[in-house]
Every structure is written in C-alpha cells, then in structure tokens.
Image 1 (cartoon, chains in turn yellow, purple):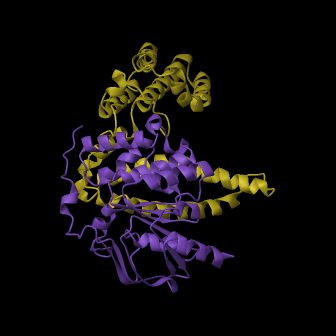
Image 2 (cartoon, one colour):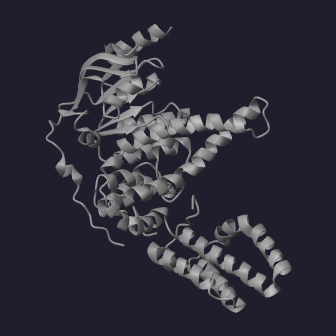
Image 3 (cartoon, one colour):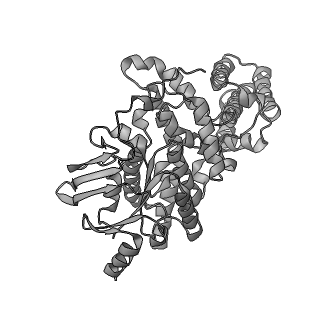
Length: 213
Length: 244
C-alpha cells in the first residue's frame, strides 16, 4: 500500500473504492463458504483477469504482493498433504491466492486517499461517541507515509554503526532510532498545526485531489 | 461517496488589519529556565526579510513565533493585528511555514494527496482543491510525480513539495526555517529562485548568506536578542566579521 498504486484510467481504477473494498470483503467471506476447487480456482482466474485484463496492471504489480507469502503457501500445502488430503490443500492455497490477488488489484487501482475516505465513512457512526473519523483517516495516511521514512532512518543508523565497526544488527540502534523518531514526531506535530490540521472540519471533503484514479 | 461541504472557514476569520505586518512587542521566550529570546521589539512590513545567527541563537524560535507555532512567554506577537496567542488559527491561515526537513512536513503518502492536505483542512471546496493541486504540480515540475510516494522524491523535490503544500493554502506570508540546509548546491539555487519569485512576503531563516542578496532587511539574532537590523549590505558583513 505504501507505493503499490499503479496510475490508470481503466474501469477498475474508476470504480468507487467502497465498492471494491465491499467486493473484496464479500469474496473473502464467500470463498470460505465453499470447498469446491473449481469455484476457488475460478475466483483466482477471475481476479487475474480483472487485474491483468480489465485494469491492465503489469503482472509485477500483482507478483510483488504474492512473493512475500509464497513460502507460507507452500508450507500450508505441504501441511495439508500430511494432515488432510490433496484436495483440501489445493482449495486452501487457491483460496488464499485468490484473496491475495484480489487485494493486490484493489490496492493497485485505488488511491490511498480513496481507501482512507472509505475508512472514515465506516467510522462515521463513531462520531456520536466523540470520535473524529477524519482523524482516523489522517492517522492511517500518516502511518503509510512514515513507515518508509522510519525504515530509512533506521538504515542510516545501521550505516553509521557499521562505519564505526559495528556490523551486526544490535538492539543498541533502538535508542538512537527512538530519539530520532521522537524528534521528528515533535516537528511533524508542528507541521500539522502549521498546515491547519486542527482546523479540519469534523467531516472534511476527501475528494480525490487531482484526476480520476 | 459524496461529502457535505462546509463553507470556507476563512469567512469566520476575526477582523484583521491587512498590511499591518508582523509586530513583535517586547517578546521573550523561555524553555523551562532557559531564556531563548528576550526583549525583541520590531515590526516586519518588508517583502523580503532574512534572519541569520549562530546555531542556538534563537533564530528558529523567532521564526516559530511568527505564525504561532510558539507563543511568547512574555510580550506579544501580532500578525496584521491578530494576536498569535488568542487568534492562532487565523494567524496560521495568513502565515505559512516551511520547515528545514521536508520529510517532517509531508504527511500524506503521495505527492498530490499531500498538496491537497492543507486546503482540505481549510474547508476549501473539492473543485478548487483540485485546481490548486494541478497548479502546484505544474509550477514546481512535480506533475510527473503526482501519484508517486513522497519518500521516493529527491531532497530538492521534497523541499519543493513542502513549499508547494504551503502555497496551496494561499497564505499572505511564508516563513522559511533554514529551507536549504539539507540541499545540494543545485537545489539550493533552485529553492532560492522559487523564494525569489514568490508573490508573498517572506521571512527566511538561513545560514546561506547568498540567499539574502536582494532582500529588503536582515536581522542578526545573537544570544536571544536582535543584535543587528538593517539592509543586507549593513548586517551581513557585520555578522561575518563577528564570526571570524
């Protein structure tokens, strides 16, 4: 999600984020209600067709999200071969693959802003308890923004330690990283003030900023 | 999904005195028992004001006083007649702030989303936000990076994005806190050109003295006081001589 959006103007890109997330959720429930390999296999083929065909995504955009879990999928398949049977293992792996590919299609065709807007909308009933949905959305967006930044700062500290002869990863790096993150957090707080975050209306417009997604 | 829009909150601003400038009246600031600024009294009405001084002299605190990020522990700061202590939101709508480290200022994952953040907070209508975002993307050569993650931009591009994010809020003045400290020579010159071309009044805190050529006024901050105040021709050589 950090940099997974692939700009485009396909019908999948233009579909409302709420609809895409709703279909993903429905698929997630639906796939666990069936044990038929043809159905889960069909779902996987359908997800690939939507992603590579209708959305015209490069195959890498989908592969990059499946790659981190292929080993777990393989282990799951082996486990089922040993504990249950081939059919159950096949269904379990195909089911997870179909969900992974569908989720990859959703994230590759939907701007973070649009996804956050859905979360804000879903959180809007909490307003009666004093919760500000816009704040929840901002927290999610900022989390996505700052994960790579904190990782970058950690890498710099590792380099600094390596430059002074400490090649192994040490817990000692946690302290300077924490200090840097806290310092940055103070400045980010000022930046939010300076950019009017405190002025944000309880339900501010979250329309996509520039062009159709 | 449709959102009910709130009218632009600018209409709710308290009465101001446009053109009155930034007025500091016997301003002092302390962090705990450490005095960072004391006895600062001056009025900034010039279009280009520079602030220089050694590390720890109080420059950044001075800059933060100008848009209410820091409120004085004694005295008062008035922006076009608006007190930063009591009318801070109205003050921040008038005075934008660009930080030294753009990474701390960019809060949304992608370029276009971050540009839209400030105007969204101001309650600007969506169509106008889209127009401003387009304008900023084009003006600062970021159009090709519209949907790129902000963390993948170069240092210079990040600083341009930070400046563009402030400009999208249409402030009347912009305070820059060491905007070129983290940049290479080419990007320093680029940001200097951008500052030079701004229509807004600017206050620039910097260690890069070249940036101040053509400025109307330069303040030298030393040990929490304004030690010199005049044109660049008067103050910069004085400051350089003090550093030797």
